[in-house]
Image (tube, rainbow, N blue to C red; front, side, top):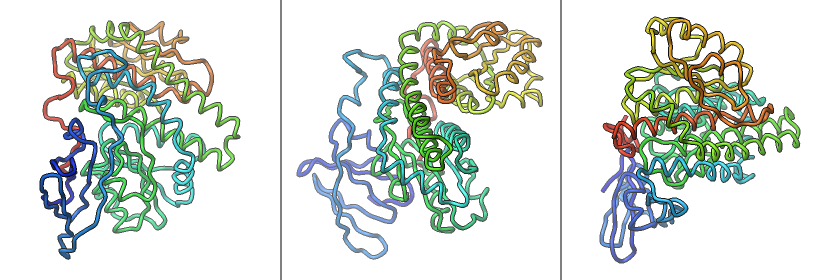
Length: 441
């Protein structure tokens, strides 16, 4: 077998069996010993044995397999002794512990990642799909807390959108698998043509993205089997927020005690999500009102746009409902023409600096007959009064809790999408036409 740009990973039971796949989970139930091929390499497979050669020179390459740090239990629909109908539901319920793990990222990794960004003259961030929405949230947090301006570009558009990259540039790449073809093309282009440094936030140790990168933060999502990502999104945003806080501390924008308060708020967000899980029946009840909907808008402002985009994507992916996510202020420029009596509009409405302006957007939709569903803080009053239904997120009424609440707000929408798709009798773990790792351009 040979590798050329698309991912290729080998699993091995020494002396017995060798497996070949595009992603590690394919053979995880059978072995945790893995070998990842690089581009322009060919592997000769024998039972329990592998030889690897460089295609260009024919030289044999020495290698060491690594042990995947996923447990066999991760490949089962069981969590803490509870059985689940779908991996997606189980993986949603893993999110609180994964966030807590992510806040504990190694300080050395955090420092080198943050300093590489700080030392750059130009910073880009790139990703695809759910990871791109996490990247947008990360960009917002890094800039909000005193970091540099970051240009976000979809990885599939990166080569065309960046014909020239200034010297001393850094590209932050975000990926669950580390094997997304468009993401790899983007960072190869930046690194090989312009000498850019690559900082990656990725979930798979030993993936192609990690090997192209100068700095890496491994997310703590662990194995995701459901095609529609949820844990990865939540841990990616948490990781990037940790980077943002470290940059703020190093630049003197926040004191050590202030950073500690924000880190505690991130840990508390895991408890908020745990409470949403306990009360997920309330989210299901609202979600069931949308089962027969053909079209839904998701609107938000500022950082909350990331949650709106993620919520819209989840409904498309697993419930096959046409959704569109917009910056709420843009809804006046075309989208509002479709609003009629009963048209569902979901607002993501955290009590941040965008709150008062968002209320005006809600009133515009409501006055035209829109069915208003709002995701709000538990202590909210004003948006609640003008909404038909609310999903309430039990965050504390503090600046730190509000500014780190993006993950709980998005989680509520991920959960709602799950229940809508389940009610429709769909296969939530394997949506049609989708793959976990998109390995084609």
